[in-house]
Length: 404
Ligand SMILES: Cc1cc2nc3c(=O)[nH]c(=O)nc-3n(C[C@H](O)[C@H](O)[C@H](O)COP(=O)(O)OP(=O)(O)OC[C@H]3O[C@@H](n4cnc5c(N)ncnc54)[C@H](O)[C@@H]3O)c2cc1C
Image 1 (cartoon, rainbow, N blue to C red):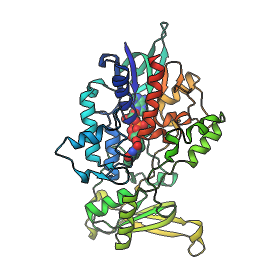
Image 2: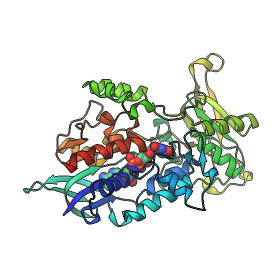
Image 3: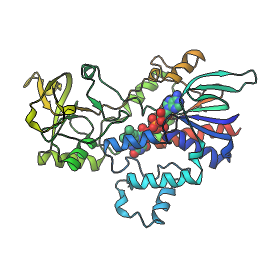
Image 4: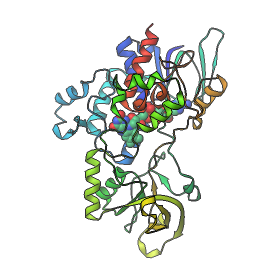
């Protein structure tokens, strides 16, 4: 039997394992992480690579270790890293530094050995009170379950894209960033991905977004990390009200200062165009053969765009014709898309808000001996729940309960 079984080997799952090992002294033999990918953190690294991120958005204190100074110390002791591996504000680390540091922490904690390949399908309780988890790789028995399913493998696909299954989402499994054709490009969303296409492929990119680029250091209001705002959030037992606060205090689609500056420079140079509006439908046509593209890329896409309210008077509808249209429309946050989460909700009567978002208790226990980490715990952890710092707060709360 496994004492602590973590479901999901992304940032939340790996960080929680490190907390259990370092803060509670849980030996490796009592801990396992179930995840369907070949290695832990595979989904997170694939997503980072797909969007072309160079520096993390979070500070160099937000690391996959219990010690907030550990990445800076690691960089100082390694000849491979220097000041170019940090960028302001808050000395945000480069992706390569963050990855090297994480690998070293995982090595120290033998994290790779904790990994069991597979996906949890259902759970039942034995007569002894242990948890029996059916997975696609067999049955596992555990004393405690920690669910950290994330949304990393549920990219959001808008309804208009259903008519064109060839359109890829940059967070689709197996997505390849490479461009083949040399003519005009189109892309929707994701400023970082657009910069990557310009930098790496000399592409011309059109970004279709609802609003002008907006700069924000964080993608949530950082006052919710600690005592400035979190107590007020937790003081209401109206979970609908908490959902409203979550919506107001998260800033999706905003850009950190370095990406904002790069986008504005590339707009000035003409490599990137920014169209304000919303795609309503797309059409795909075969392109002329003389444009040097393989059969695979023989389709040209026309996106029909309803301009944002302010521009609608001047132009009721716009069209963007592109060689390739890519979705960078984030992730779905609907937990019913995750089979195991749906199972726990329905078969174990786990409490949820009307929108289907889990309601754990203050220790993040959702149903007896089943705990939540990451975005799934947002109604207790607040706006930072899906970010590294929110996962630190979640792991601390769970350690507090398990240690008792
Ligand atoms: C491009 C990008 C950049 C980001 N940059 C930052 C940043 O700089 N700083 C920051 O703080 N945050 C950042 N974030 C936000 C956040 O840290 C990431 O989204 C992170 O991946 C969330 O981790 P997670 O463990 O919750 O989820 P995921 O990374 O989605 O991992 C969850 C894992 O659980 C697995 N899983 C799901 N269901 C099951 C099941 N039934 N059985 C077994 N396994 C299952 C999934 O396959 C997946 O591997 C970024 C996000 C993205 C997409």
